[in-house]
Length: 92
Image (cartoon, rainbow, N blue to C red; front, side):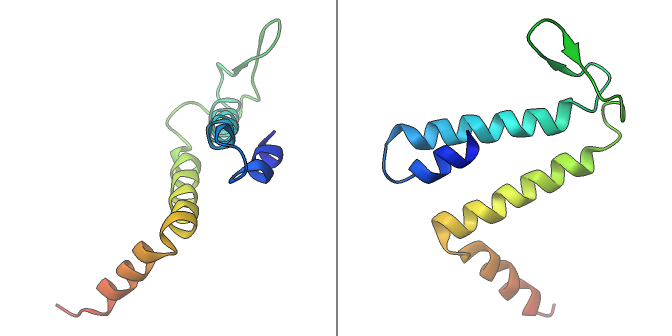
């Protein structure tokens, strides 16, 4: 679904909403499936039982950082990344 809506971005107005839904679903899968409560499936919940909530928030933070980096590239052509690079060159 994610690849299909990525292909339709810019062609159909509803593709952006569908792509956002697919990205959110993927993030929900990556963040909640390893938890003991797991993900709701058709008849019951399924869990990988890899960690408990709050112990691997680095993965969620990395996903947010990646999403912000991609959004900065797509809509702002890395304007904010260049601004951060410029701030690093200023010596206080």
